[in-house]
Length: 516
Image (tube, rainbow, N blue to C red; front, side):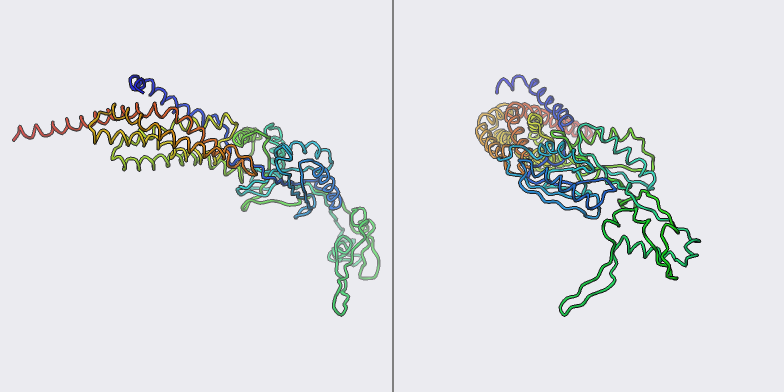
């Protein structure tokens, strides 16, 4: 300790280096919103060709269900079709306990992806269920990128180009879109003059087509305790084939059976299955998942870079939605949150010590804690998420107690025993070393279960423990060396300022006495 006090310049250089290292590590460490959890559940969304029938969709669901259930890590699975779209299906998967499957949910998805890709006509997008999910649409993947257009034509033209561009990014997977504008329909166009010659009205043609391809209740059968609705429809082998239009006859008012082909013709065209909106404007949402080991911050930067290459017109507005948008908002609020915590601590310590400089001495212990937390996250390949930021904020309270224990003792020794600042801080370091070490070890050991926990959903708590352990370990090594030097420098600064104030006061008093 005496050596440190003899060469304070080296210690100050170390302190400045830790401050610079904090800035560098904050820029370099991968960033995310919330840790990717493996809580034993997965969700799947099947997107099939837009011209598929309900029966074909049911067969694809059964094929993919058999592939998923055959995986040794899957316990149970349930799925259903429909949900507003004939070409969509949902799947909910329960996994076996982690000690049985020995593999994470993300790796299970990566293992199933090539097997499911062999099923023609549809794609199954899977994602691990998360305890914390923030807004956004319920898409086929976990993260969303939204395109909102002032008009539908520009949106329909540029959305597929954006989708193809994002699919070239190697660090994201399962890139898909909710744009459904390629559904098939048979557009029937009738000849008004020919139909009028037969006395056939447009309403009569519409009713005939509805009876053939829809369901029409024509009667009700009554029993003493029950009643049955009689529904008329064509046989499935007819209404499932658009060629059946050539076999439809319209019953004219004169009693004639007029072939529909005599008064109308039809042609297959495309139509939108649905048009999503965000607010009052049409919107297309592109969903994506992250590759294993990829941080959300890296994916956001890559998507923004590739989106700029598409050359969107001013009528289309883009941005992230849901969890990805919340992540972007958190990036701007994290530095403000930490700054607000530091200001609050400074005000409390200033009131406690009745000084402007001694709170800064206590806060000088925090850069080493930040370096330790960020290095621990970097070495363990853990992202800087909201949970890790909470751990860093907790470090502000845990680490500053080291400085408080020393500074409080040193100030009391100066005021009560008349010692100089060097002797008082030296004695404080020697006598307070044991309580500082004991409290630091207690806090570190308390965070070990958070950092090493392997239970279900432990990924959400792990960054908190890693940040606390890393910050406490590094701060414990550096605090006993940097805090005494900072205390001596600020104490000398404070005495120098008092001397300046006293000299100025004397200069003001002496001219007044001479004039008198």
